[in-house]
Length: 201
Image 1: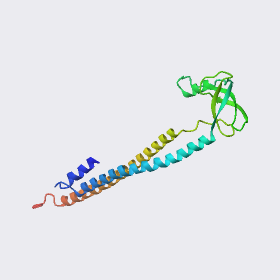
Image 2 (image 1 turned 180 degrees about the horizontal axis):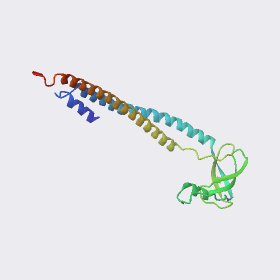
Image 3 (image 1 turned 120 degrees about the vertical axis):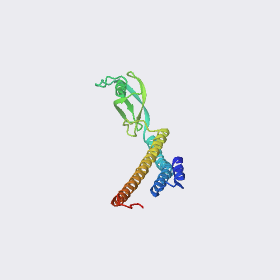
């Protein structure tokens, strides 16, 4: 922004200033103001809307998902996985067990689940289920919702900045094309008198 304003001030009374130079500087200033003000407003609006929606989802998930106790019965057969011990699929495969649990409505369930840590048959651990007892992922918490909302706001601001900068470049390009056309026309007119006696006198 400071650089744009300095450019405008430099061209304000310069004897070498062309109309297109001043127009380019004003276009750059308008784009900078729009990015600064519009970007902040867009980030605030989009981030706020995303946060409201995500927090509603957080509340709904916490109402619909419940932690229940599960009892490990036996380790699940190991499937062929990536041999890299650092991969999450390998770690998860080591913790998958057959377990049984009772849903919130009192119905009994059993199946293959991922234990939060290594367990042995008979060990108990917590899992998340819905109202009917089906295993579901852990509900999102408010801090994650706010983080996602911030990212959404920043992404929207970045998109606006990219669109404004693209528009500015397009306008400047069209101005340059018009300038070059005028130069060609002036050279053509000058070429008609080039070398004539008294030309330019």
